[in-house]
Amino acid sequence: MTKKTKRAIFILIFSEFLVCLGISLVIPVMPFIKTQLHLSATDMGIMNALFAFAQFVASPLIGRLSDRIGRKPVLTAGLFLYMVSEVLFALTNHLWVFNISRVIGGLSAAMVVPTAMALAADITTKQQRARVIGWLSAAFSGGLILGPGIGGILAGVSYKTPFWVAGALGLLSAVVLITLLPNDAEHEQPVATTTATPTSHPMSRAFWTVPIIILFTMILVSSFGLQGFESIYSIYVNEVFNFSLSNIALVLTLNGLISLFFQVALFDGMVSRLGERRLIRICFFLAAVSTIWITQAHSKLEVMVATLIIFTAFDLLRPAITTLLTKASETNQGLINGLNMSLTSIGNIAGPIMSGMLLDMNTHYPYIVVAGFLIVSYLMAFLLRRPQTAQPVKQN
Image 1: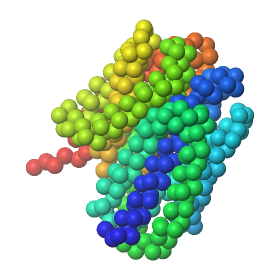
Image 2: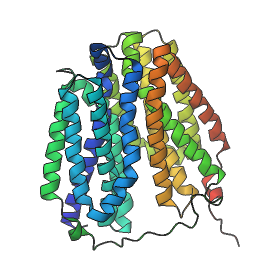
Image 3: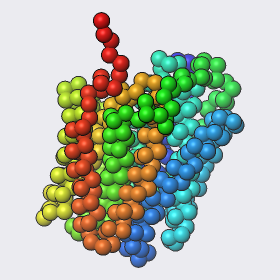
Image 4: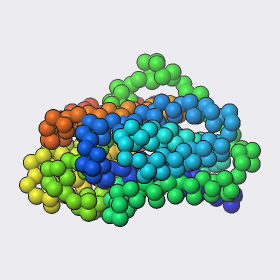
């Protein structure tokens, strides 16, 4: 790997981390925005869902655009839009402007996240690609995991501080990308740009095997459950358990550190020891039980412990399900990953809206419903076959 390629990859990782950080910075300050502006939980849920909706709608269009005009212009525009989104959020106190800010943020994420993945594929060999895509995925997860904790710490100064800092970092990242990232023509030659044609059309019965249907359903449920849980978490614990901003920041920061440790240091060992199917069942079970535990808790310590279990379970679920998906079909990796992202976006849209509406009815309703979905997923996990059954088996 050349020095120029390494530099490009570092810039892509930083850009992806920054945008994903912006997705979750808003979470710890939600109860204070809600209280100060006299908003409903439904208003807050819609505001969160608009980000995912804009990303869901724009992603395929942006992908085609980057194929035509090149990756670097799209990435640069995405980072500038990210800066605009964060600064707009910091400047206003009006709900409709908050909503516009989140739409712009979702558009920026649609421009940065998939384009960074595409550029990484352009500039790496097949041997390097899996490792580099893994680094980008870690940046994606790291931004989502650490965002709430960092946002909570910065909000100790002012609840607008996280967004001013994010806007400044967005501008810095855009300037670095413009000056240091090579132009597209300079790094198209090292790699073959054609990919294998899938052997099964997405609408064919050959593609939609039972394991793939179950796994995709779990992807949808896990993203729906995580966003349904996380999007109202700070409001819920503030209203029900009187959590302060420092309490919320502590829990979310601890969660970020614990989840990253599990993903980086322990995940491979857990899969080797337990297998993906058993790990998925354990995670769904622990997440469901701990969600119910929160609704029955009587102390802040109980809530904190249950929260850390839930977030860690979700952060292990996603890579475990994705690993099984990649084993379920050897010839449709692009299709599988595209559908994976689409279903995640749908869950990210529906989860916050559902939880916001249920929270307006009763504080415990959102988590009771989330627990119900997790229990159904736990039972579905027993239907999964071994990965080898979805692949051709050599016979004498």
